[in-house]
Length: 165
Image (cartoon, rainbow, N blue to C red):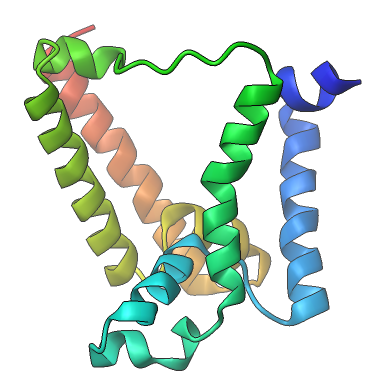
């Protein structure tokens, strides 16, 4: 049973409805939407005095527990799954950066900044719009999701053309 739940990837027709049930259950029980980028804003609100982080949406401290639970849950699942061997290997990124830790770190940091800025600009992260926003029937989330998908296909096609297989 453990393998079926935690090790073997769930088929899309089980995982999708399971994620949907979590989102709907949270909205029904608490009246609040699930959101990772807003959770990071709640963490920033703890120490920042910037007016942006003083908005009511960042006042929910429950999101902080959710954000902290993501890596903790990942570590627990990894530990329970068997021997855990941390590594600095990063697959195709290693090939692109020729294994340079500084270059790899720069690429990841820059990508993180761009994703964070894009999430704020779009009013939420791609998964938030795609999972939560569409479930709430927000037209803006549908438009954002289509834009994310089109942008992803265009960038992937460009990178494939530039970098090859």
